Image (tube, rainbow, N blue to C red):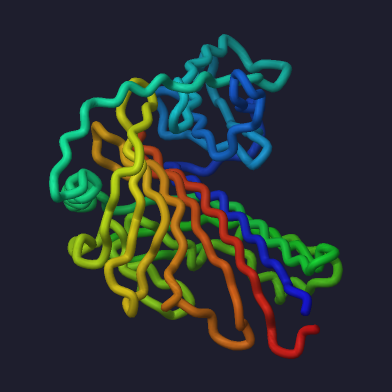
Length: 314
């Protein structure tokens, strides 16, 4: 029996104003292996403007005024600061070096350090959420449907998303594109239901899934510290997310936490087996990857992979 694979890429960047996708281009890679670093963060210093690299490590960012300074960072690597006196004529070649992690002694107790770390994340979230009133986001969505042998269709969309603490979410469709075998009214690429993994509860396929920063998250999850990494000389905690309850819709996977601010830097999570898609979907494999930056706004990259086996498809 054949399967249909649905791959959806959401590029989600929260910024104060919209800007056109043109300007400084570049590629971010590992300084030793030369392999591309996808989802590396690229920021313009002293602004709220930023972006992330794609799967090939490529980025493009609009710079309005020169001189300008660009900061490039990636978990587990030394960040790189690039001064631009004027707009470069060629793409930037940014090669990041791995950070040398110096581990402190671990004191063995009955309580895993991951639990204490996530407790502090939840407490810090309560503080900054009180001050968050609104945000604006520009988002790009690309969805590819393919079977075992070929691509079936491709759909894309660009949206402007708004959130207000009193009015809720609002989305404006900027454009839609699709392959010729798909009608415009069948293009469902969009970020209307894009989850924010800092929310207390996250809706997926009609299920309300308890978030890992929910005030009572420690009643639903075990958090286990796997590794301490570094970024910009600061510790980054790699934490395994383990559901406590088998019958409750929850997530499992990995979370990365800034060890100074105690804020989420990145999550790589999938819903547990309680979360199921409605018919005709029989089987699916759904995973989310979202990245955050604490430079006055939140940026994230979300990848969704869905394996679908519809009824009657042979």
